[in-house]
Image (tube, rainbow, N blue to C red):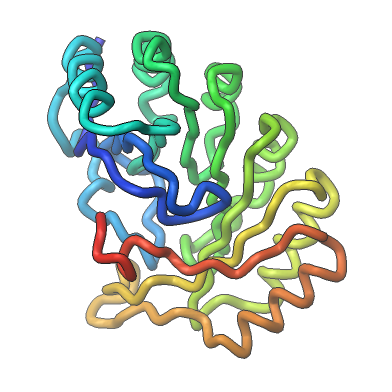
Length: 236
């Protein structure tokens, strides 16, 4: 079995509770969303990347783990769940390297997630605001939150176009279904807008971010504001 992968590489995790941890990143090609602030727009088209076999992936893992210690594998994209069948077999093949398996997902494909969720030690759920993707995905997100393993977390990217009512809906969603999940507010990294030609996406202002933070803390105990560190570090 093969899958379209854009890259497989070693780096430091730049987001969430494992910030700074050395991981192997497996980036899948193809995404079912078009987020306005996307920091990997080249991964969106279906079929993008190279065709990787399970054997090639295992060989690359073997090479990377010989270079330095790694704590986990981050299966990212694009959207990995679009190639869930390969993902399941790949984790079985690479499990003998003794690494934790973490899924990074846009959380709108709960049916596919249910076929592989037992394989993951944690899931990084990127909740999407309607202002960023053009529609509401909260019903799909709700299904996802009900099925997450312990150690998972929720991230929301915030821009200057993020709306208060959207944030209120996010807080309600997490508080009602998974109140113990860590919630990370991530100011967007400035980028070219994917939905408005010629415009750039700007991060939410610090003042508004703090307002969102304090609103979330009214109902949730584990809330943090953490920027995307890869651009700050100058790493991919």
